[in-house]
Image (cartoon, rainbow, N blue to C red; front, side):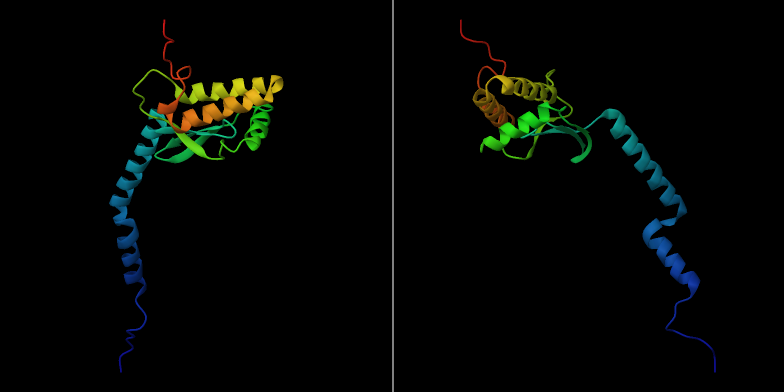
Length: 160
């Protein structure tokens, strides 16, 4: 009687099957690894593909292919002031909104422009909270739908 068992695969066959399935061989794995590293390196050097802003805080996050990799929080105490104002308004949701896609087709920097709006709102909160809430609501509406921005916010010149 031969000592041959069909129930247990040999060690070499299992390893080869694993290598063929997952690693595609040593050469292919090396090529895929190098291409992946080059792609990530070029993406990092080229810059993000979009920027998002949080409507209730003014925080920015930069995304590469939809994946947020860099965050820029509003400095304190401005962030706390804006959050307190946002809690008083139902028109300012706690969501992230894409405010710019790269490459840009204009020379504007909407991400930085919107963040400066939030800084102005934080300064206004010390003087008049109601006016600051209205400004915050206007900025939130403008960021969510840029075509509905008031004439004073979209760069249009006043009539002569």
